Length: 71
Image: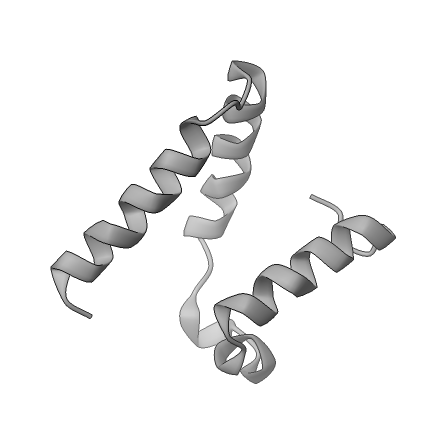
């Protein structure tokens, strides 16, 4: 992926993260994000590798709403 596209994605995430998010929540999210950094891409299931960003966002939202995702 081109560096320009990567920067665009990171800028978008930073903007969303900075908007109306209390400091305590930011600290908790940063702590949880640390565990994402330890994910080995080779260990991810095929279902996660092939899902789109839109599908992943829907799955995460649904998991949080139903209590199936515990983060």
